[in-house]
Length: 461
Image (cartoon, rainbow, N blue to C red; front, top):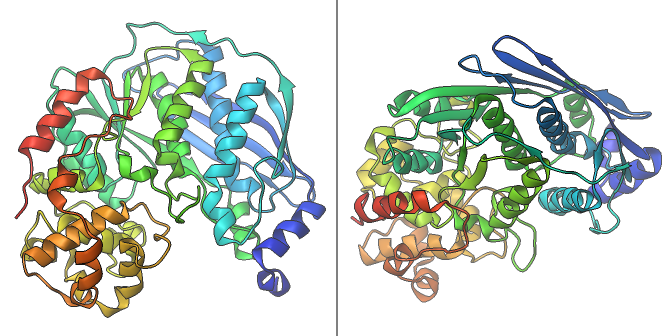
């Protein structure tokens, strides 16, 4: 165990790929209950481990799956993204698909997701992986004709809630459409998600899907096997389509903004938020359409907006200020840890719209006065080459927020220290607040509500 932990990521990668040749997606098992559905997946790495992760989906109001074939395809596809978490422990050269079929185009789709979704994993572990050769898929080839589903069965919005400001802004937009029923959705549930959902008076229902990791994976992680970031938002994407399918929901309204498209590692394709990017959104829409022909639409409601515009709208949603949490480090405890780049980013991006007193009430302290956050400040602003591996906005948005603080003569420690860089590199915030990104898949129906929120909610202080 000690020897394994002392190896570099690349050494482990090479050693494991020689020792463990295959990852096998063996099977999946669906149990339909009166008001829920359970799934068990069977994965194995011969000679290393077997894994049996589980999922649980509620089925509300006596709904019944419309088509068994459609259900099987969606469940199989969720397993294809679920397996990433287990494959990366030893990164076998071959993934054998023993319980489903793919077309050649779908194979290429999966390889693209695996490679770019694991970009951070490869980068942080120092693994030199090539997109053409990092894995092969062995499967039964079969052209996929989409299963047709009825139009009238699917109504209303399924809104994934993460507990942070972004999904709250989606709720602020959607409450302008009282004719559309809002059903909140989450995978597992931290305290912040529970509190945000409790405050949403506009919702008509709530769906909590439960995902259970196999403890064998945790054991391997503890022993020093390869570990790192996986594209969790892709898991949310597939699970949300299953939840919408089971419960008759038409619009799956994500809360990913255009800022998520910026790479984390400068001048590369390594993006912590790859599965939140517009590229993934478009790819995912194409893939689902190869499975089912239905009115179910997966799109990001906030894609036309940037993080700084979202912060402006969120500043006007005052009832959520005490309960939202965007801090991954403190999420399980329902706190802002005050020590991570995500805390610092949210503090900065809200600073043009909330007073210092309001920010202190939310975060408990002035994070820009903390010497310990100097490194993250440099990464967020672009003084250092790479951004933190967190879901944060663009370097230009961070600088614009800080430049606005300088204009207001609010000069806490970190702003004073890097004032010259901020002033010389930052753009004016007013220009960013007037932007609108046309690269989106938002149905025309919702565009007016987004613009109304942007115009009438929140303001510079």
